[in-house]
Image (cartoon, rainbow, N blue to C red):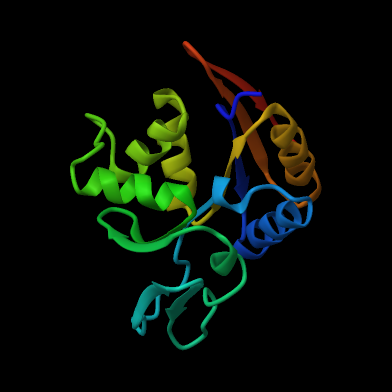
Length: 182
């Protein structure tokens, strides 16, 4: 089966998004195919840094909210400060796509670095501005890439873990979109 399927779920809180990722891990979904994107929701200016070393990720500041949890089980983590959006965290394969976009290797004309990463992953251009608005408003995206079976499991998780909505995409010769509201 093709791995060109994609689910994008919107969560209102980091806690809900992290619960979804942990549930997907417990179901055996490939953690290298999951991404988490979200604005750092605290406004304190006490952020010290973010790093990934061996299989441990640390983003630290006075509450240590992003150390551990879902960030440790995703492949790759990046911290960005994005003008107009503020501090941003990305975990999973989208982190590499966004870094590539920032370095100019895979930038998509007319899209932000985050938009380019989403587009390269398979999100249609006409959906990207909505996802950027949602994240700017402080919500989180969980993005799952995989087979049709993976999408079935990810959709069930999105329905049971508090996703406010989710979209399914199939990227073949042209991108088809199947949207569902939970």
